[in-house]
Length: 492
Image (cartoon, rainbow, N blue to C red; front, side, top):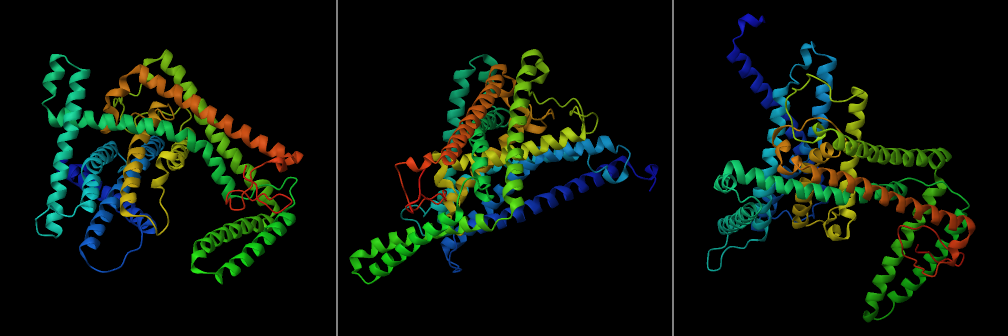
């Protein structure tokens, strides 16, 4: 159809309808994936249609919506970067004109809006609704629980707004700031979400270095390590002896009195642990040569290269911040999508930035669950309560919402922040941004040095045979498959 035959109003209408359809399809895919993830870990309950089942189902839907928004926040910045590079590479292609600035801006604003909605409304509602029982003296039922939930949400909103009002009045006590205290929509919500983003950035700063070092341990457990100066046959033989001894003790305790039931349960747990260790040793023995000697070193080198590149980019960003004030993540939107490339090496650098973002996000989630403070939120397959799922969804939402801000603050990407993500107050503070970069570089380097020095020390001890001088033994450590000559399993 010729351009003269279509009015400007019709073009805008078709563009808006197309953007709504694309946003709906993207969110539908994220929602379906999130639903399968949550149902995989959610504790299985009876199919009986009672009041608690309805409440759990509503909370499940709200958690699924929140997890889908978190996924959108994670994929938002990579999608924007690759869309901009595609538009630069094919500026006249008719079939990619739907990847325009209006769609990208709309996605950023929607993710920002839904993040606020989930963080301040949906997740508190799901938690209070799950814990509510109705006010004393009222008729029990769904309506009573909904009424109690809304009352708790109202009191929580008053508490949070009061805290923000007092904090704002103490920090900025000039006349303009005091007058803006009465502006709920233009001041309170952006300022509150800016504080939440700062907390999310600090949480990422605490979790990501730990996750980067922990990633080597996790991949070492998933992959088969090279066998260096180890006799797997001897270890398997010793573990078989332990398994047979525990099996005989368990059979003997089964004929005992009821008072020894706890002892039998402990023996059963030890036996399961021993069998897990035996399965790992047998898997290492069955592994092919390329899997042990090629795949494991390649994966470790890739992880090391990703971490090293991240630290180098942060170091370069610190230099940029010191010599050029335009490197500050102020969220400038002067350049439209596809108008110019923010990557020096084009598509190659854009792909590298996207890989690093996903790597940092995976490391931050792994580091979050590795911290002793948040170990209780670790989900377990088919055995995770709805309260724990709510805590996990809120934590992942905070981490994913802060990921675009952290990527821009650390200089992982030069892509300008769009929407409300680029209007946080603390992004314009030079000292906060530089301190954030310095802490990330220093803490990540220290975690890696500590990780590799301890690993090298353990390997040297094993190579020299000095690991047998360890004094602590435990036959039930699931992470270590190393056994001493007398059949005991060492705890290093």
